[in-house]
Length: 240
Ligand SMILES: [Zn+2]
Ligand SMILES: [Zn+2]
Image (tube, rainbow, N blue to C red; front, side, top):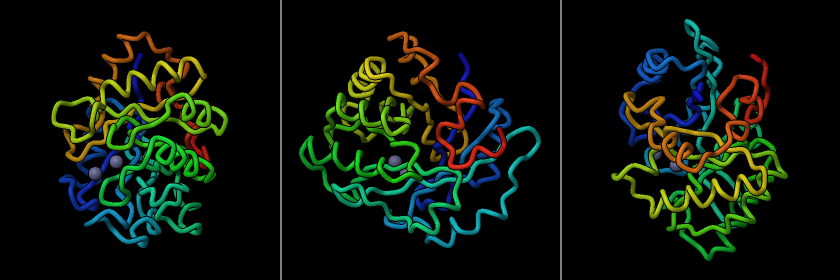
């Protein structure tokens, strides 16, 4: 099994990441990826760019050498209804939106509130991925979450960074495993993401792949194992 695309990568524009888009793309080429998605943090994250940054994506080539370049955002969920900090006009201009819970933007609620926040975000047709739903600072009902994601055709992220010892997320590994098992039960698609904040981490899926192998998670439920399946998380799968 090979992961052929990394759709969760940050550049210096995020305010707490340290590489340029060009450096990330070059790393993606070195790692042999077929597609890289750039997904900087949305405006409510301290230090993140304004909406105009995401509105100007047209200047970025769609392909460099053999790698497809997808343009997205990691939006912040702002309330337990699942509102995000991207306006409707800008939503439609991007290839995909990841929606995530982040501590500077929303406090942890009850399990019901957190789960409802993610389901609310999934109701937005432009939200195609839920980022790192694996953090006990935001406890989740994984049965409810995976059922909803499956129904709404949203992919849940298996985030490689959450599995690293330096992660600030709580019990990432335990929760990722719980989530994957429920994904098998409920036929829910997942996407593996590096969540890289420095270029050498682009395409680093080492921990995620080890977990996938450990629990024998089926390849058919992993969106980014083929370009065809990647269409599941794109607003307009124009290049497929
Ligand atoms: Zn970040
Ligand atoms: Zn995030």
